[in-house]
Amino acid sequence: MDKIKMTTPLVEMDGDEMTRILWKMIKDELLLPFVDLNTEYYDLGLENRDKTNDQVTIDSAEATKKYGVAVKCATITPNAARVKEYNLKQMWKSPNGTIRAILDGTVFRAPIIVKGIEPYVKSWKKPITLARHAYGDIYKAVDMKVEGPGKCELVFTDAAGNETRELVHEFNGSGVAMGMHNTTKSIESFARCCFNYALDTKQDVWFATKDTISKKYDHYFKDVFQEIFDAEYKARFEELGITYFYTLIDDAVARVIKSEGGYIWACKNYDGDVMSDMVATAFGSLAMMTSVLVSPDGNYEYEAAHGTVQRHYYKYLEGEKTSTNSVATIFAWSGALRKRGELDGISELAGFADKLEKATIDTIESGIMTKDLALITSLENVTVADSEEFIKAIRKNLEALV
Ligand code: NAP
Ligand code: MG
Image 1 (spheres, rainbow, N blue to C red):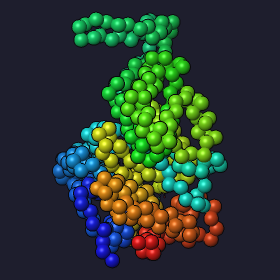
Image 2 (image 1 turned 90 degrees about the vertical axis):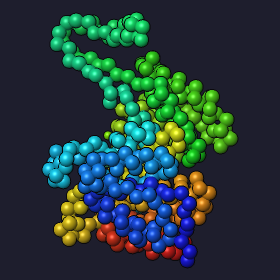
Image 3 (image 1 turned 180 degrees about the horizontal axis):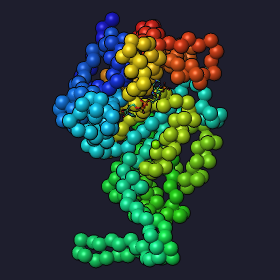
Image 4 (image 1 turned 30 degrees about the vertical axis):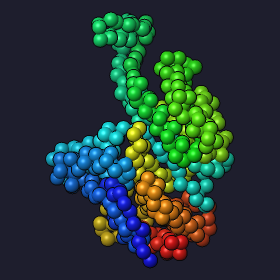
């Protein structure tokens, strides 16, 4: 069999611990036998980040801007314990944070649906994709403890020195106060990322805020989305038969629970933080979530939503077998290869990504799965596979498909 050729390199960001072990297994068993892999490799493993003073992370993000598509392995975000464990020069920042700051954009997370891993919400039949705005609001706020009676005001001073004031509260006693912000640029880019992703995946967009109470702040989000939609996206949405729908956040929550899924739920930063954990858990597992960062100028970085699975790695180092779920990492690769195939007009590559995903889902639905899934499945007589056996079982199904 001829291997599938690639034209443009895919940016490959290797990572840490158990996911780094899975990364190599996936490449050896599921990719290299079938695809003439053309990647530009960046080793984001903690040792190399330390060695390069984290320049490798910056370089990998710049390469993503150059080529448009990246696939990333989970990486350690150092804390004090890691600084000691790896004897680091300093406590390097979160690679995801560094990459997001360079690419800008919105993170989209969606569950991978398989028979036998049923959502806790019975009506959910299709994935719900959560689009979380990743800038501002309470994550960039200043807050203050008020110790006694007094006046708290919000003061804006423009470039000419003119002041605008709003009374926050006239305190009779002690209390708390907060000032937060967002920027038009960031809200606009959030809106465009959501609408572009909807066009890409042919799904409706739902957006909700608390604009009835937050008449200026949240209302501004609502207005920005509507203006951008009407001016730039309305016609293309109509062509594809998809819709943009705005409602109040309380109403959205009720509708989401009663819906059958199959849409993008755009959330402000805090709502997205909370709701993405709820949606992931209700669908079954973090190891069964896809995650992609989409930048406003159309760059894509695919990753798994979970971490480096440190506890399993230490077992692996002691020579023990682990049963680590590789599905999210496999889907990071398939997502990136499909996007590369679409951008370069290589239908075989996009087709291979579909087959790889089908082989993975078929394996689980046939009753072969890792321990985390075996614990929650409704299937009977399942075989609990170790990390390697699971990937080899997928390989067998994949060979029958290609
Ligand atoms: P984690 O790696 O997501 O793992 C937490 C626990 O969840 C595991 O111990 C395991 O439970 C279960 N789990 C997660 N993924 C699994 C999988 N694929 N298969 C089976 N079980 C899985 O989170 P963490 O242990 O808190 O973090 C470890 C490291 O990852 C940290 O250094 C952190 O900085 C990093 N991290 C990176 C990213 C990223 O790069 N995107 C995201 C989050 C965390 P059991 O132990 O019960 O089996
Ligand atoms: Mg959270």
